[in-house]
View: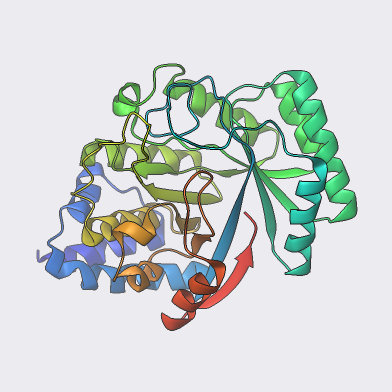
Length: 331
């Protein structure tokens, strides 16, 4: 069987929602670079079926920065990081209200609020829940939060307040996880997500490529995410930040071709989810960013918590120049 015919078989599996094998997933990542355009054309058939030709432009806001108790090696906000970032507790309500008005006035579909930290006491959750309640009354936008581990009571508090979706990334494969974080476990992450799903939250769950993981680790992560069946899957490519444990990480293997194959595999495994190319696209896909839209239907603009990004205007131009329609979402 030729590579092209085998890829067509894999494409049909994605339409029929049959189970991919890990061997077939590896075949995608090992595909010769000169077959990439063929792969993109095949994957685009799935992307168009479920997502049309629209690209959601997401805006990410950092509402609580730094001072995290965890030791995640990639993160500028971790307890071990020496990165020169701003550190602050929950921003004033007026700041969130201001951003909420921007979201509403620009007809944004979602307002995302990221808070550093892994656990929060009940008084912190109560304060934030009051913020969300007021935002819902005054602005009414769909709210997504990245907020670490929650107790069942805290999660219900936020859901009752009006939070619609929660982001909680797996970040890498199970077997590699202890190489990037030892202050909590992979199973704790999955248990947190399952609890959130159990009480009705939408889930955003993805990972980071370039942490030192193998292709097998990437595949393991994507299969775990597929089992979770999230509404949204953000794929980040590591931006080594000065002051973090991975500041000197070797990311030379993150060629545009390899990054695009990972995005294609993510679409094949989760054809109905929003697939988002998140941090690092401006670095690793430079010159070939337009090709990512054959697989992804969502991207970020204006930065990634503690790292800068492409402006909204330039991001819109990227989307339209590639022949796609855009919508701006605060996600």
